[in-house]
Every structure is written in structure tokens, then in C-alpha cells.
Amino acid sequence: MTLTRRQALLAGASFCCVGASAQNAAVVHEVAPGIYIRRGVDEDLTKQNDDAIANIGFIVGRSAVAVIDPGGSLVDGERLRAAIRQTTRLPIQYVVMSHVHPDHIFGAPAFQKDQPQFVGHAQLPRALALRNEFYRKRLENTLGKERAGGTVTPTLLVRDRAEIDLGGRILRLEAHKVAHTDCDLSVFDLTTRTLLPADLLFVQRVPSLDGSLRGWLAELKALKTLPARRAVPGHGPTSVDWPSGAGDLERYLGVLLRETREAIANGKDIEAAVSTVAQGERSRWKLFDDYHGHNVTQAFKELEWEQ
Picture 1: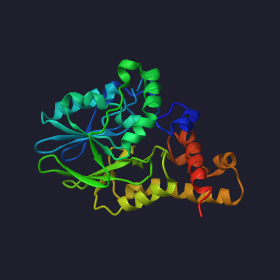
Picture 2: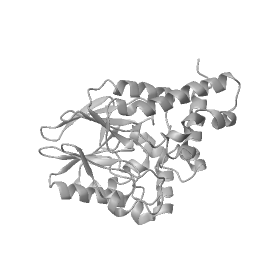
Picture 3: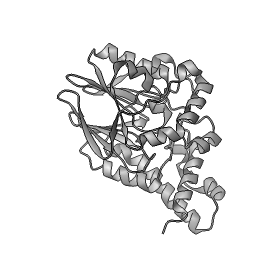
């Protein structure tokens, strides 16, 4: 995501998480049969980590492969593609892009040679049009133009729910209302009952609010009703039990909601709220000081005029 707190404010907390080696960035773990995940480092974007800071991966069916987020840069995407080819020779038929943030999707050009369907939320094209230029320049300034990558326009849009078949393996896709962003897409693997909610789930690394606080809590509540055994966070461990794995995130968002409302009711301005709201959460999260202030600012703006 962003390099500094100020950039987080400007970019909508867009570049998430310093020094991942290429070796670690290429390692995938099989979290359930046929589901392989690369753990992103709990850092922010740097030249050393190639923006390999999000959890990304792929799912293998009997006849095809689906990429679940293609990575944070061209080199990150190329490493993921190489990991797929070391695992299977099946065609890469789908590349799912979970939301607009570059740490998840700027590796997409690495997969164009496979001619897959690029899958995204119905609102993703609009979000890309608004943000792509800023994100691209920021990545190029840090990584260099030849390593930065870019965006690919989705060819398959999900407006509500959809399913894709990898050959005896159905993935259920859901386009969410405004939550972490305004274009969040989750994946549920029916075969292993594994939920891949991307950045609708943060574990250990502080969440970044770029959409709606109330909406995020509502979407999280709905996701918890799914009969999933495990979930793959967008940031954090490669797999957590579900729904218990959402406990820390739900607590943080709840505290942020309650204490922001209290700050507004007590007549505090945004600056005062940033310095006081949810400070009890500070020791519980990595990168708290980098993103929490932005979260409070976003929450304050959302809640200031609520009825």
C-alpha cells in the first residue's frame, strides 16, 4: 500500500505493507487440496519487496486453473505464474482480481499470454479508471517501469453472484457492497469449503478502510454465515479458521465505529479523533501507526452526518 501516512490519505490506503526476498515471494503453501497461497510480507511497498505484500495464489481444478489475485507488480505476477507452472500444466483460465488496490492486481499483465478471463467486480473498471494512473506512477517511481506492471481491464464482470467451473470444481464469486473498497470480490471454493475474501479479511496487519466502515461490518457479518471451514486473509497468515479468524478484525472495526461515534457526539474534530479513537488497539496490529489515522479519518467522514 502507501509509503507514508500522508500518501495513505491521498491514495485511499492503496498500497499495503519492507524487504521480502525473491525466494520468499515465490513460495506457495497448499492450504487446502488444490489451493495454493503465497504469503505476503507485513510491510509497505519498497523496491526490495517488489510489492509482494498481499496474499495471492491459485486454485487447481481437473481441467483449469484460477488465479486468485495476480500480485502487486509485474515481477510478483511472473513469480506466481512460475509457481503455477511448477505445480500444474493445466491452462490458466481465470484471473480473479479481488479489488482495485495495486498490491493485489498489478501483476495481471504477467498472465495476458495465457489469454484467461480477467474477473472483477462490476465497479472495478470505474475504480481503475479513477486510480490507475496514480498507482502506476507510484509503483514505477519505486520499482522502475520495467518491474512495476499495471492493470488489465476485466473481461468478466460480477454484479451480484457468479460461478466459474475449473472442471469438477466450482468457485462461487460474490460482488460485495461498499466495504473495504467499493469493488470487493470474494471467492468461495465449494470443494474444500475455503473462503478467499481478499482484503475483506485482515489478520495481524492493521486493516485499511477505503470504503465504508458500516458496510464492511455488514459484509463481514454476512460472510460469517457461509459454511466455510477456513479463510485466506488478504494480509496475514495463509489460512485461518472460519469464522473465528474474523474475530480480531470485527473487534477492531467495532471499536472504530463506537469510539468514532463517541468522539463526534462529544464535539471532537477529526484531528482530536485521530489521536484518541481506538488507541487501545495499537498493540494488537502491525503497521498500526501507518494506517489507523487514515481509518479514523474515513470513519469520521462517514459517521459525521449519519442520522
